[in-house]
Length: 305
Length: 298
Image 1 (tube, rainbow over the protein chains, first blue to last red):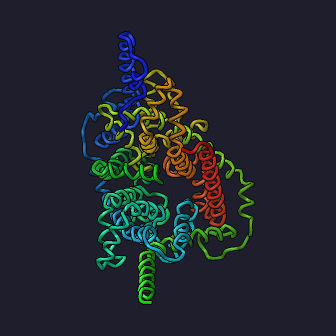
Image 2 (cartoon, rainbow over the protein chains, first blue to last red):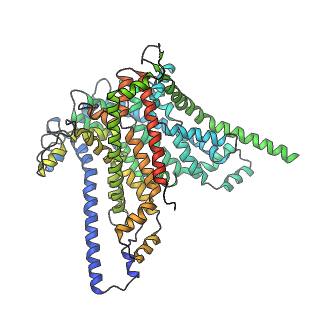
Image 3 (cartoon, rainbow over the protein chains, first blue to last red):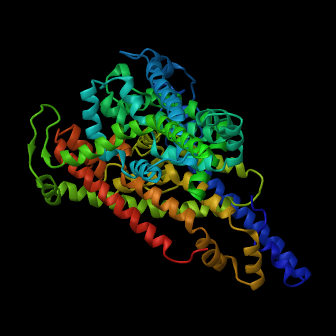
């Protein structure tokens, strides 16, 4: 955190008179007030929609739009608290909403676990092993990152049809395990692990794979958590692919389920708010506890990348 | 002799380990990325319906159709306008927020988390909530406007306003991410640079333009390139909120590709459009790298 401001160091130049100091003091206060004012206005713009969504989930259907105008505390706080929206989510036909939450959770956990294993293995080979065509292979796997998924979603869908994977968990999970960006990110982390550490393990009789499992992985836990978070969120939020490849209610994921509520002719806003709340809370909690890993990942990719 | 034998055994062992470690990821990328990408290129030269196996080779006809298709042109125009608006607003706002928050003061963590809330929320949920907030009669936005004495706006029903309404959502969702990256960039600038500036007597405005911005080049490049690529692929808000309307005013490239593939079942044409998308994304990225990398290196 940078605590010095340019104006504070100005005192090095000339000895300030009493009046200068008073002006500066007053100015610092004004700057602080403006800073807090602006930050609060923006903060409200980001927080209010969430508050509205969470609180509306506890309103009866009739009350949701009743007090929107004129703006008052009644706009947000339910007059009559109810769990009826959540109860109706559990009684949905043909599957309760928990089925969609469960589908998403299962897919996200499987993608995350698979990604961790497969991409860290490849990343280690690219970071620390020497073999023919290493750079060419690395560049090729990176090239897959540049192509937008939307550009090859159609043939991938056709491939799923050939495999007979449409409307299956396999189609939701397996194509997302190998990840070029992940290989790149983890390789960056692994390059920071001192060579000597690996050499020592090798001299002690470890195989390459043994050194990877016993030295590199345990020394990269923060990096692995960062990567796991990124993959989990990407999978939990994914929409385009599940919409195409697994539209059946049985395999429907939570984001597709919510979009289905929203785009249906007879829109049920109470249900939509309750469903959105349930789909957001798990991720919110996850990030609350693991925030610093995520922030670290963002900074890594931005500054070092 | 002995050492050479040993070392060649070691080399063989290393190659074997590498092959083993690389196999799953490479196979995955080959089957689920490289192969479909090649396939997309091939299909784009065919007239291929979604169902039924008969495909007819039409050479460049799909690409020729695209260049004369007024809907594609509309989608391209909308996408370009959307991207420019989102990227400019997002970078300016993120820079402002990062500058404001780049000090130690009570509550700084709280503000940072607040700005980050939309980033960790799914775009489907964000789009759903904004769709309701934009409602002309029952929406929160118009209620705020009317309470403040302004008139209600037809956010999603006016062809002149709808695309801008989607822009606001795009900025709101991702500005926290850009802010975080720029904050990292700001904090990487050594403090003594600012000290020498204030000794030289330059004011904070010119310090910002002459020192901070050039030193932020790398973080800025990252933010601009990433947000451009993301904005160019905008799909979810269109699908959830407007369906491309009213009167094609929010029809975007990826939405049009999706329509062609899964509503009109024209896979060949959709693939040709996908390759035009890929080409545009590559050109844009390369151009931004040139533009932002060219000057001062530090």
